[in-house]
Amino acid sequence: MRYVYLIFGLSVITVLVLAGFRGSFSERPPIEIFPDMERQPKVHPQSPSTFFSDGRSDRPPPAGTVPRGAFYEDTYFASGKQGEDWGRGIPVEVTQQLMARGRERYNIYCTVCHGTLGDGAGITREYGMIATPTFHDARLRDMPDGEIYEVITNGRNLMGHYRYQISKEDRWAIVAYVRALQRSRQGTVDDVPPANLSELGL
Amino acid sequence: MSKTFPKWTNTLPLQIVIFLILFLGSVTVGITYYFTPEYTRVGYRPPQPVAFDHSLHAGQLGIDCRYCHSNVEFAGHANIPTAETCMNCHNQIKGDSPLLALVRSSYHDGTPIPWVRVHQAPDYVYFNHAVHVARGVSCYECHGPVNEMEVVWHDKSHSMAWCLDCHRHPEDYLRDPALVYDLDWRPASKEAQREAGLRFVEQWNVNPPLSCSGCHR
Image 1 (cartoon, rainbow over the protein chains, first blue to last red):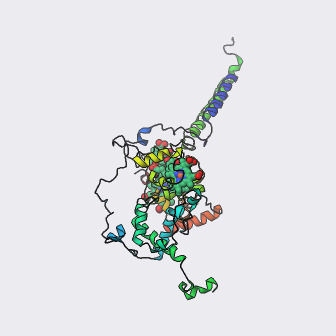
Image 2 (image 1 turned 180 degrees about the vertical axis):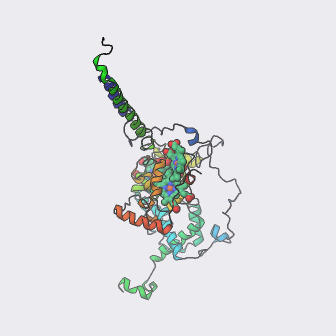
């Protein structure tokens, strides 16, 4: 009997040595005992495909088509252009809510390079991205709203485009917020409502 | 009468019973320990084709999760970013690093980067990121401290019992939706979490599905 326990003890130790404990790191994919229901032969988002020649299951839209819900009557809203020129003005109602949305989106997608204050001193500047301009100069203060919208949509010079990450509504919200950032450096005491003057100690 | 059996055999039945209890007991313990997702999944950390580091990008640089996983708020699937997203910075930063060779070739000719998938729910389960994130369930509750991971690993078991633990008591996990992407935020105390959680549950009428058809549609 002693031998039986000895063998039993040894096998427990072998299992522990081979299998280790819960939560230890491993590069082996998790075991799936009956994978037929777990991995059904269907197309998943962003998964590889052997059906299409480029190996991707996500298909680009066919050339010349517009997805449902992506067409806008208002061409200024969709393109930033009024006639041949970049338009001026925000084609949606500017509310407190829109500004808050603009600030949130700006802080997700823009601050890393343009900085929270719009001065071009985002975190990436420390790592060698030195070309980021500041919003607080005459050129960008005079830039039409539609052109700022266009830069977000298609990128410009070294900046990539954000047309897939940021929806059209959100792009206009960001434009409105960028205008507010620029305004914040241009304000004078006369812009402050009289009721709030005391908060500034004036 | 001659002794057919030697004396030690008297205790043999008892010994066998004790051994069987011990043996079957350890087999049961072993199976529950080793054949459940807490063992098979947690800690799965596959090497990735590009040495992308969340602790650098999301932690040190402070990039919001949505900068890259931009669909997570709107869609069931949280997308892995395209090479274009990486090249927003890497056309200027470390532009010729050999570690980024795959990203550059993907950017130029569109060949996908073969990222290795870490989290993958079985196909008979319906899971949706947007509903969870919009209701104040942070990435942290389901993916662990991603902003501190150099290589992403599977931090939670993602078993059915684990989903249900939260669906039965969402108040222990919910937070202000503005803090969902702040993976360093922790509630001040268990009581504070419960109190705030109960308020959110009531305010938004949070009612996660417990019936089978909620998740197995």
